[in-house]
Image 1: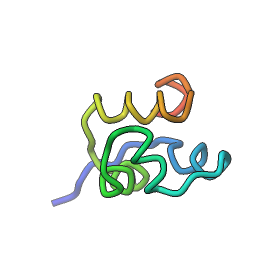
Image 2 (image 1 turned 90 degrees about the vertical axis):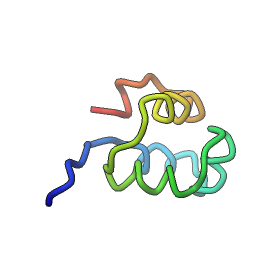
Image 3 (image 1 turned 135 degrees about the horizontal axis):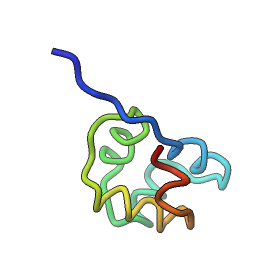
Image 4 (image 1 turned 60 degrees about the vertical axis):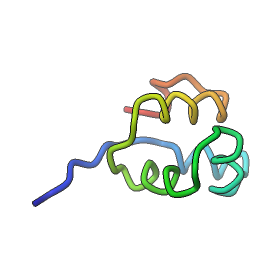
Length: 65
């Protein structure tokens, strides 16, 4: 069974700042595992994605294509 991956730029923006996965997770109030899933394009909750966008100080649509 193939999982659907979603294209996003979480890793690109995180590394530009630069932040570790753990630091971004802390700022967003999420776990590092959630950030890792997101960066791999695996399904995550929209609420989590919105928290990451806010933590990165970016618009949701800039990150999640």
